[in-house]
Length: 500
Ligand SMILES: Cc1ncc(COP(=O)(O)O)c(C=O)c1O
Image (cartoon, rainbow, N blue to C red; front, side, top):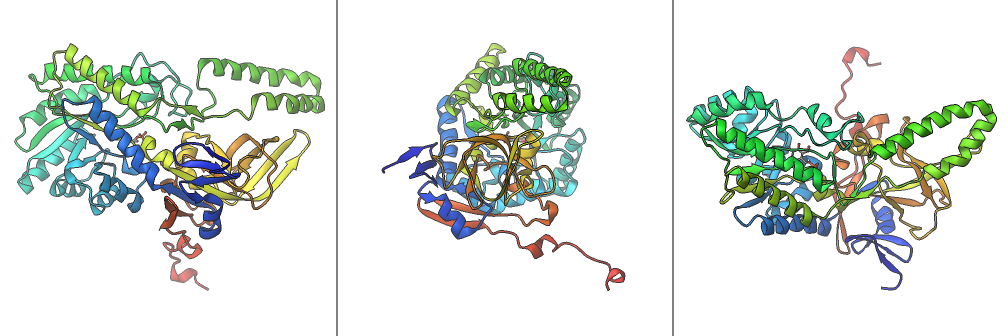
């Protein structure tokens, strides 16, 4: 096709307009309204198949189970695509378990994670025949009691918390600017090793518990494969230590959790490296030192130097899934072999979330207004008809997404601006980005919103949440309709005595 440029596997620019698969995104907005989330069915399928093939190829000695984290996107239509592909599921709540089972996931491929599971919930898990990942000290007692009542043997895995003292890179997860080893310490999940040692012995002695394996989830601390290799080495070391303390027991299932980012990691923390931290500290001191110039001249200088530092992309590219699969399976196999543990027949499990759904989704929104000030600091704002409250998960993680102007995708950037949402907060969806000349009615496409965004949207400022559209080739259909204004208030009750 003339004038076509691919952005990635599902997004392309054709004659200056953004297409997802074969659908013109500007036409999607005309047809379905704005703002709107859009998912690419074929990208999701590709992402899943890539995981399946990479891990099956690198783990020939045992079964491979891909258990996508449903928390990242629990829209039933999205989940059904993965079920049809044969994927299992990682669930974190009773609602997610229901959604997984309703969409036909094989219970044998469901991993129930998370702390604080109630007795009723554990009963539901045992009746459904899913695997339970034990995350609390008293959970095993509850499982044992309920399993005895039901006359079943519960298949459990213990969620471990290895130590990672060599991981000194700044974490992309914790709000604090700390290295990964410390960032991981404040993450609540997993049973501390001092407690897991006696717990495992009890599990092995119980007639109602089948201790099938172990689980560990690092989380999205870093994209670097060196971090992943070190994590896996530590995990293998802890497994060997438990083997020694638990009379030679070794796991039949090893789950490595999720955490590798989307291909365009929308990493948003300001200070990703020691160099950036020093730069930031220097800038801060410089901004204060400029006070000697007096108010007017200081702002003038700041206005001139700011464009040199702002407008940089927050996005960084993570390694390919094939490399990730090779590195973590080789490291696991090698480290366990070094401890005398064979992986032959061991089931390898992985629970991708963001890396599976993220780049299959975009968010389309329309410009409502633009605004400019020249003093004391020159600044531009572009106000959208959406809000960062529709991306709550991404805001929490400080994401800085890539984007394209869907109806003027080839226009050159001419200025810096904050692209902001319509809530009463600062709502800086895309702070300090370079933009072309845009006007009300233009459409922006924010990339990589397929994981943790749509599902974390909330109603701040009484705003109804947007619809979600599924694109497949040239076809597009609604898979979640937009909320109505009435629905925003549907759960509220006003006591009779307040009624006028
Ligand atoms: C147990 C578990 N598995 C998998 C995931 C998915 O992680 P990600 O989306 O970073 O791949 C999470 C996320 O919190 C998790 O807690």
